[in-house]
Length: 342
Ligand SMILES: [Fe+2]
Ligand SMILES: [Fe+2]
Image 1 (cartoon, rainbow, N blue to C red):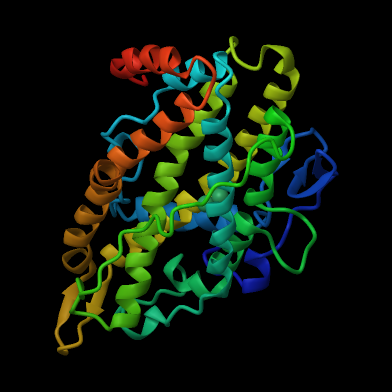
Image 2: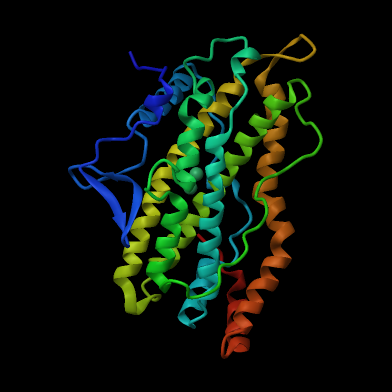
């Protein structure tokens, strides 16, 4: 029988690595198998556990929430062609800034490790000891936070450090000043949207949904970076470093797939649960969650892009115009506007 219950220590356990993960002189999380395969940090039990929880849902014919980049209907800005064009023209600051901000945001993710979630067993009728939701406080949040921003108990760098290493491989250190990252990338509501449950539970469920959509947006951003950096016509004098950068990005993507998987499991489990509402009545998790999930997807897929569009364009324009020949580079850049990222 597949195991569905794990201790916190197990979820946090590393593989026995044949080789440690070191890049650009930096000790990084995870490691390599005998065969040279990259193994994500703390996944010796975490991956089998998540796969078992997802399989349990599938075996019971319980739908797993749909969360893929196909939800992101607004095109990426700039497009791949536009970003490639800027690099070809020697306009490097936009990609530098973008990679740095990604690292800064990843670093903030470490805060997840310090959350202490309320016990969902207190409001869910069914036994949740064999679910992801039942393991929120048993290693799923700590490992996730450490993946993003490093474990303070270890010297190995997390995703933040991996992005800075990627950037420095491509551009060298300190090429531009460190930009300011946006204050928040979550959909935040001051009023209650799940009044059927206590605010502490709503907070966690909304947080997990935000996190899942942020991971989905990240997946598209990482695909964008990879396609740009892997493009044969950029970084012509450092193709080797560019290949190396792509390898690092792929390791980050492999780590992120763990995050998407457990979040999908936990949110789906809540949907299929019977909740003891605040008013004493039983209510299905789906009834509480679905209307909010719909708003969440729309916010991350559409609203945030529309809200930021003008600002993003103005900022990028200023960076292009700061270059020698900026005006003509910008004119060609804008002509590429209609190209769509396939
Ligand atoms: Fe990450
Ligand atoms: Fe993540």
